[in-house]
Image 1 (tube, helix red, strand yellow):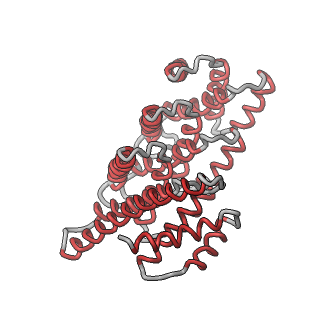
Image 2: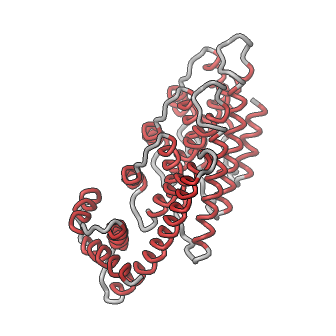
Image 3: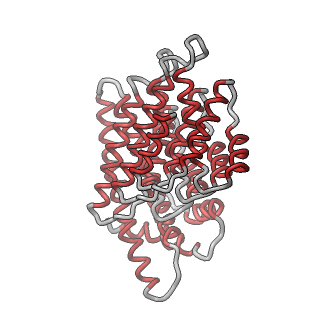
Length: 374
């Protein structure tokens, strides 16, 4: 316990969390060790008893942390011959949790996001690792349980991030012979995601767009990659689910961008020897990328003009309606169609009726006018 307790204290002190209640951690560790020795896990029951005995606190999560740490520690030292997953997965879990958690903290601190709730990331990582080990993915169910246990927060996305990172990490260390994408695809995913995310951020920062919502790009990239591995493309369906989970907004296009970037990246690293057909596909991909960038650029410029015009006249607007109308208009013009009324009904069905629906009409019509001038 000394080793884990000292690591616990050092870690949180390094994050400027100095008001720890160490007895809670120690109590959790002791109880977790005993329960694991008897082959049971009763965290909620033990925590309730702890609160009854020691009182409630904002730092009761230290009891949980100690309990979970003891469970992992016990499994590392239990006698040989007991049931065990192959390849000392507990040690691998610890290494991956530390690596990914520290990378998570360092990345967001570099973006001046310092009010992280890292325990949410750790909880998500632990649950994601366990589910991946059983070959299941239950993110929404696990997140709902997490919120019920820890409460809602603007930073609940850290739980999701931890869950998804654990799922990827587990696939890196799972035993040989299990189903797997070709040639260490997980490592390639990590490399491709980091590269595309950094390019995405650099591109928009160079254009003075500083308040990106990068988690949308990340979510889109991950979902696009997974769909591509299954040979499907479900962008609209995935986006609706994303909006339901994270809400809409003027930066929803980052989800689209991440999804499409993942498709291109996956196809690049899984394609066989280049052929003429591959070359032509790459040329088409390049053209689509240029068209996508043109759309984003024109959409931003035109939307800003729309906003300035109406705000200057004292009218309240919701720019997201205009942008979605513009996007649908772009898609229809690209295939020579004109389905403004149908598109509006479809959009209202997903988002609901609103006083700003007129902006969708304006965006759709304005797109056709803008494209006729280019």
